[in-house]
Image 1 (cartoon, helix red, strand yellow):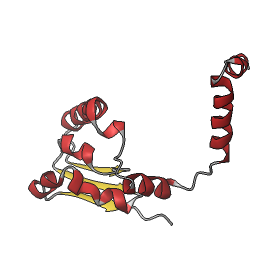
Image 2 (cartoon, one colour):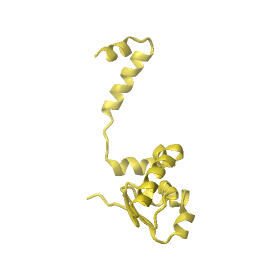
Image 3 (tube, one colour):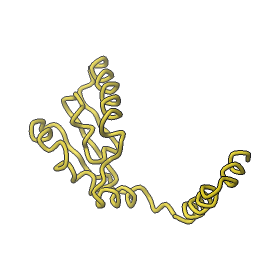
Length: 128
């Protein structure tokens, strides 16, 4: 409770934090499909975990695991726009995502990777 009281007591920031908190509580989460489709439609991507230093780190860990365990195929649930795939080292890949918008975004990133690697595919995971 001490942190909450400290924030409330801060001039300007305290009242603003309260307004943000109330607005966030009123906003209803409409599901993963709605969230990701909206995000991709607004021109955004799969997020920081699929790009830049975080993507490179994740790819390093996964590629080491794939190599050390002689894995020949990978299935990914939550592949998003497929950008992470461009860093993967696996012969066969199948990616599923809740958002059809995301799985159709290969044109934004690894389309040439897909055309060179016919064993790779992105698909929509249809909610029931």
